[in-house]
Amino acid sequence: MRAPPRFAVTLFASGLLGGLPLAADPSIARADPPPPVPGPQRPIGDLPPPPEPPPDRRRPQTPPVEPRPPARTEAPAPLPEAVEGAFRPGARGEKAGGRALARLGGGELRLEKLSVTPGRDLELWLVTVDRIGERDDLGDAKHVSLGRLKKAEGDQIYRLPPEIDLRVYRTAVVWSRRERSARAFALLVPQAIQRPAKGKTNRNR
Image 1 (tube, rainbow, N blue to C red):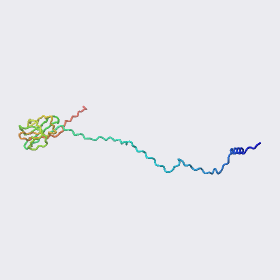
Image 2 (cartoon, helix red, strand yellow; image 1 turned 180 degrees about the vertical axis):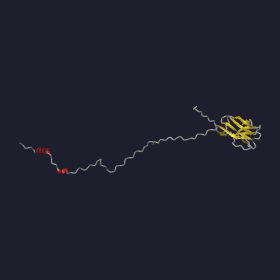
Image 3 (cartoon, rainbow, N blue to C red; image 1 turned 180 degrees about the horizontal axis):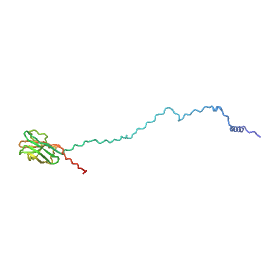
Image 4 (tube, rainbow, N blue to C red; image 1 turned 30 degrees about the vertical axis):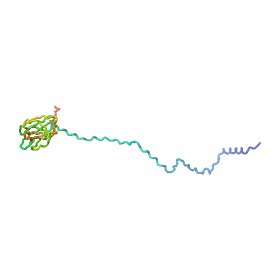
């Protein structure tokens, strides 16, 4: 019988030995652990700063405007309802008394308790001047004649033309045509007409 070749014996021996457990090698247990491998988890130097956000090109929103409280406005002064004035003498020695009264828009001028020096050439004028001196000639002043004076004493009423504004023609004048002077005059000042108060009714009757 022929002996087996060495190659086959070697394979057979290595197979037997591979199945047996090898003894622990103390040199292997004492070996140092492998050095760490640098990777992405390891910081490398200083990191660059984060990029700035792009500017907001949108139109900025304006804050809401709070509504302002309405401004306080003063109530306009009420218009006068009437004008009146007391008669004064236009020259020394002349007699003058009573008053002139007219409602605005009423269309008439009332003379109450008039008392002036009598004369046949007397007229009632309305003039635009506010001050009348002694012996002033009002013929050149802007005026309107209401006609001949009805009587030198007592109450009387004169019609006013519709275009006459008593806030412009502010003075009533008893005018003497012969003497060309004022016997008496009354400056018409705005007045408020006093209305009678309404009486309170007793409901507990």
